[in-house]
Structure formats: C-alpha cells, structure tokens
Image (tube, rainbow, N blue to C red):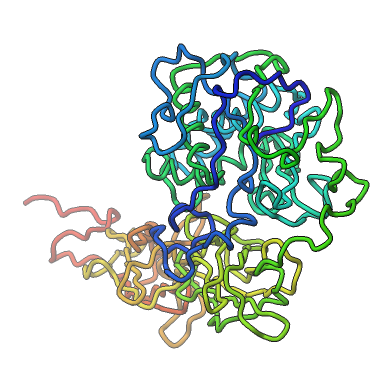
Length: 573
C-alpha cells in the first residue's frame, strides 16, 4: 500500500498509471496463513485459506493502495510488467528515479545483512526491500526521516473499512494508526497493525519495534518475506513472497520491475530529496473510495472527514446497517482440540502438534477464521523454519493446526498461545516442555585393555560412543568419575587420575559432552604408585552408565616393554 504524500504531484495522463485490478486469488502455497510441514509443504487441504478467510488480514498491507510509478524509460531492459503476457495489466513507464535516500538505503542494506546471518537460505537482496519501499511509500516520502530512521510525519494508508479496500476492523486500539474503529497500514513499509503485532522487529537497537522507523520496518519486511522457508533466489518463491505482501498480480509485476531496475544499479542521495510518486493504484476508484492526500507538514492521519481516524475517536458510519458480520465476528472463544502433551528432547522436533478450535457462544465450530500461534517465554524453541509466530486458517471443522514445533537447546517449560486474529476473545495457552538430551546406550569404541605402570600414564585414552534409540546421541552431557568400586560409587582417593589445567590431580570430570557423532574422548589418564584394579564410571544425562576397568601393575621384565613411558626398555644383549 502506498503512503499519503504531503507533496503529491499533479496527475499526468491517465495512461501512464497502472490500472488497479482486483486482488488475485492466491494458491494455498502463496498465502501467508497456510499450515506447512517440515519441508514447507501444505499439511491439510481443508485448511486452505479462502477469499473470506484472508480478506481481513491475508497480506502484510491488507491489500491496500500502493504507488504505480515505474522505472524510467532508459532502464536497460523492459519492465517485467510491460507485456500483457506477464499476467497483469499492460503498463507504461513513469517519472525518472532519482536515487535512494541515504538513511533508507542504509536500512535496506542492514536488513539484508541481518537476514544473511539469521536466514541465509532465504537469499534476500536489499534491492527487493527497496522495490517494495518504493511502491509502498516512495522510499519513506523521499527520505523524510530523522537521523535514527523514524519518519518525520506519519505515513498512513486509507482506513480499511471495506469501501474499496479490504475490511479490517481495529486490532490495535489505535496504537499505531490512531484509528480505533478500522486498521490502516502504517509506516514506510506499510504494515497493518495486526501483522506488525507479530512481524515487528527492532532494527536500530533502541529496544522498540516501531513501524514508523525505517530500520525496524525494513528488518520486519525482510523476515516477513523470508518466512515459510522461502528461497528468494527461486522465481516461484520470490513471486509467492511478493504476493503475500499484496495479493495483486499488477503489484507483483510492478515490484519485479523496480527490483530489476535497482539490481542494475542505483545511487545514494541526501535524505528528503527523493522523487515522490504521482500515481496510485486507487486513482480509478469511484469518488469517496480513497483517502484524500494530507497537506504538507501535517502529522495527523489522512482519513476522510466522515470516517474515523486520529485520536478524536470514531465518527458516525456512513450507513446505519454497517458491514455484514465476518466469520471472525461470530467467534466467542478458542478451545483445545485434543492436543497431546507437548514434550521433546532438546534439538528434536515435537511429535505432537497443537490443535485449536474456534467456536461460537453456542459451541458451534467456525471455519475460515485466522488463528495466530505465538511462542512465548524464555526459550529458543520455535516453529519449523525458526519463526516464533504462525497464522493458520481454521478448516471446515473450525480447527486450526499449528506447524510443527522444533525444540531448541534451552531446557524447561514455555508457552504457545493461540489467539484469534482481529478479535479479542478468550484464547488458549499450551504448555510445552524441553528436556535435556539423553543417551540410552554407552559403549567404548575400542576393546584394548587399559593398563599402566605405577607412577606412569595410560597409553590409550578412553573413548566412548553414546546413542539413543539406535541413533547418534549428540550434545549429551557426560560425567566421568574414578570410583572406589562397582558397589561403592564414591570418588576414589588413590590410583588413576586426570589432571586439571594447573596439573593438579582430579578424579571427577563434569561438563563433558558428546560431539556431533555421539563420541567423547576423555583426557589422558595417569596413575600414582598404587597398584591394582580400578573402575572409571562414565554416566550420561538420562542415567546411562558404563564401567571401564583400569589396571595398574608393575612392569613384567620378561615381557615386552610396558607402554608406559615410565618404564625403560631393557638394553640389548
């Protein structure tokens, strides 16, 4: 969706604008709320979103207005949307591009770098953020931002009241858009409040998630485009990601044209000097269906006088009857739909999935309702793909099944909270537990006898392998203790020992861990002058133990030289 520009240029010929088209019906793989399996594939056909289910919040912008100006005529190659065969309305080239404002460009590039580290498989180019930023807000109104990246005046889209746009009733109490009746897209990347609630990020490190800040908004857009395990180097995934931002084929073609333009090169310009778009996707909408532009310097939301906005509260609706109730309007509460106990070992996938049912006050199931699942609490567990939030549409039985959970390395309990998108009703909290990694089998990797002479060192180091249910048990905690006997597990005070970093005698080692192959090699073992048979007990998390026999005996002069360095070979005759 595009911003309200305070210095909007006079309209040129209507033929230079892209004709607005109806929102394209997306396939299930393109829509943001579809449940997917571990490989990003859809898991339930009856959970596929329908137009009724996605009209309220199916995209980042709520399918709101955007600017349709195209790259200049001297672009090296034609725009992808310049041909009718591209699948959208034929378009003409628009005003020249005059570069990207410095702070805005810096925000795009920092977001790209952050995604290289967080989600390297996404292959997000900063030029894609620039293309969307150009179409959504003209690069934050030509770079009208403060030094920290916050827009000097709010950038608000038209209220989404169903009049020419989607119907999205207020979800944030007017916190971001100043509108307590309907939502409006906010900021340089034009997020609707209900999407920002889970997609928002802190991109400038000030501890806040502000959709009006270009660093925060660019980083949020980057993560939004990289969800669902999309690899944006693949054209089909790139198309799906862009369409999930705004579900219009013309929007897709337009963003692709700017992406191609920016890939061929652009330049940095001072903040506040960028070119402002002059044409909008709603230019041809009937009178009264779009929001008039604000005047230069005004900071109040740009909404018609007869519609709600700002902090003054809603005015009277234009019609007494109001819009027809949506499925979301009929939901009274969410209820658990038979979710099993959620437990997984650190690093493993939870075998159970969360199921939630949307019901009316009478207990009737409600289909086509968007349910948001949010991982809360101190945990590094997340849904498949590393996301902490997933949105799923209820099926014909009113049930939404969350994507699979992947346990992190942090053990303990956390919560997954299910709420209804766009309606404040009683939700459901699900407790999930992550237990430490364990092993059920522990064996030595060698059957060589472990022997040593008094005062010497053992020639071989002890190495063990841990498994769990036949599979490698990696990152499992291990303790090794030299004990008095099999029946007395207290630490021995004589015989074999390890050395600490200072060379002091140590007979218990803690904090050990198996490697990626389930292997653990213990440090070098030494012995004092005590001879005899000793026991090294190795214990894994989960209680699996292995007793290793150690023998300390004087060298046999008639036998081969002892492997102990303390014994000298017999001289030749």
